[in-house]
Length: 213
Image 1 (tube, helix red, strand yellow):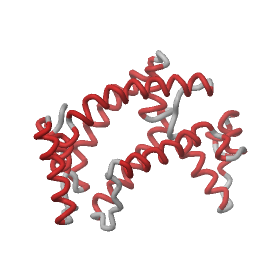
Image 2 (spheres, helix red, strand yellow):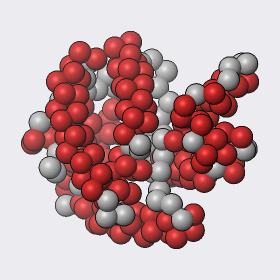
Image 3 (cartoon, helix red, strand yellow):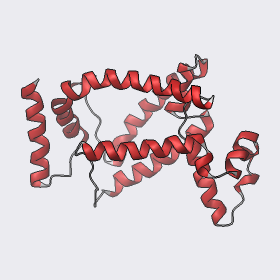
Image 4 (cartoon, one colour):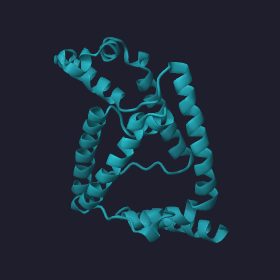
């Protein structure tokens, strides 16, 4: 364990020292496998799963609704459109009473917006403390295009499905709802398609030997 962790740390430090940023997925997975596979992966994954379950139950207990993520993005985007004179409040999505109330109120009154902001702050803090925060100045155009296209498809799909892998899948299963399991099965099909599209956007697909899976 100590030898692999040390070797993984040496790989990352070598990248930083020689400013090697044009790395593929296999390079990163190999570094993570060695650097964090045991003392910062296996045990923390178990702890993280337990904490995640407890926090999800806490959100349900406090707010009366399961944890969600992506509905806040629709809210933020619609409020931004209102600033430019658009009228998203007339769209069918915002005709639902709960959605209309969220759009009419302040962002910080929306429970999902508050949890999303907390997630982003926590992620920035964790990456900073862990030394993993990195601002990329040059991103290849194919990778940037893939991120934009993928983000749009994921966001649109999450609205059609009534949630993302958190609101529809994780919270669905935690709430003993059949739709969470259906979401997971369909997501496997989407993952199969996505893996075959990754090379078009400059990404390589990890191999079974590249990860703990």
